[in-house]
Length: 178
Image 1 (cartoon, rainbow, N blue to C red):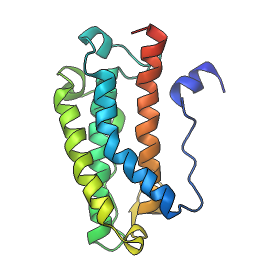
Image 2 (cartoon, rainbow, N blue to C red):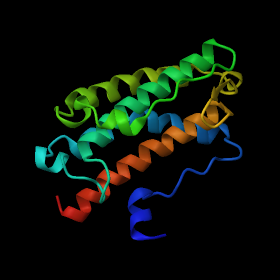
Image 3 (cartoon, rainbow, N blue to C red):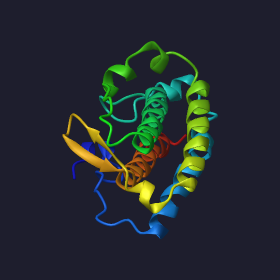
Image 4 (cartoon, rainbow, N blue to C red):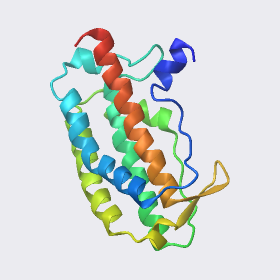
């Protein structure tokens, strides 16, 4: 892996697990519960200059990354709810890169995004803890990939997403000596 690839995928690309046992599922749910606090502890005292530093060359700033996490995770939570209440719904994709260029992602304090992440994860955790194994088998269809995803798979992907972006920020902090 090249240095750029390592910076893009500091924990490696997402690899879909073949089978997710209940013990792994419980671990994933704990990540969803604990991620907002872990992220806040990492970035809450960063200056605007630090927040406006790209995590890699030609990458998003930390501010954009935190707003992306808020956008992405609230979309994921909604997709979970759609899958639980509709029969294999087709979800609505969105252009993450364009969203990251909007003013609410590049120019304001990260506090609103951290509050969105905290509230979304609190609700997501309660929802996840209430699901049966049968409910985790529910699916939605992603129209860009023409694939159905069950909620176990999708939860694994979002745990990776939490860890992936946390590593971007943590690695930048270590690299800069902040």
